[in-house]
Length: 185
Image (cartoon, rainbow, N blue to C red; front, side, top):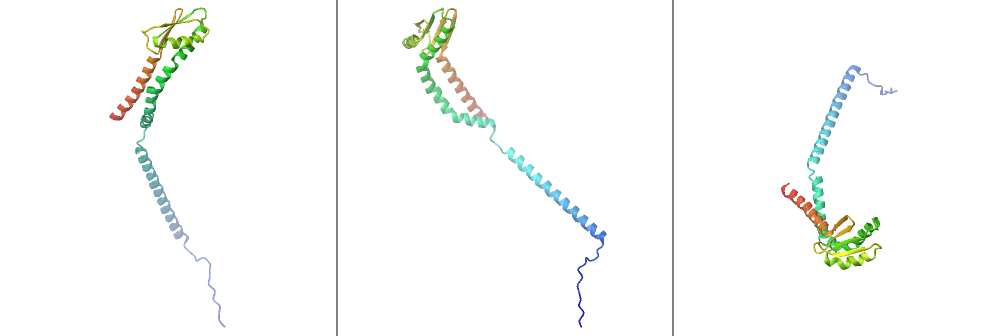
C-alpha cells in the first residue's frame, strides 16, 4: 500500500511585521515615483505651452496689416474709379434730393442753388421734378461737383469733390501708416 501524500495549499506563515514594512516601503517608493513623473509631465507641458506662446509671431497688429494690405488694391480702386463715377453720375440726383428736403422744411421761400456751369443743365433738369420753386445759377467759383443751396438765411454747401478728396487722403494715410509700421517695425 502506498500512502497518498497531499500537498498543502495553505498560506505559508509569514512574518506580518516584515511583510508590512516591505509593502509600505514599496508603496512609498511608487507614490514618490508617481509624483516625480507627474511633476516632470507638468513641467514639460508648462515648457511646451510657454514655448508655443513665445513662438507665436502672428499678432493682432500684423493681422490688421495683412488684412489692410490685402484690401488696399480694392480700396484704391474704389477711391480711384468707383467713387468718382458715383459722384459724376449721381451729383444732380443727390442735389435734387437735398433740395426737395430743404423745400419741405420751408416751402414759403424759394430755393437758390449755385452750381458749376458744367452741372447747370443737369441740376436744372433734376430740380424740375421737384414741386418747390428752385432757381439754379451757374457759378464758376464752385468746383464741378459742388453746390451752394440758399434758403432764406440758411446756406448749405454740398461739395462732393472735397468729400472725394478727403476719402482719398484718408485711404492713402491709412496705407502710408501701415507701410511705415512695416518698414520700421
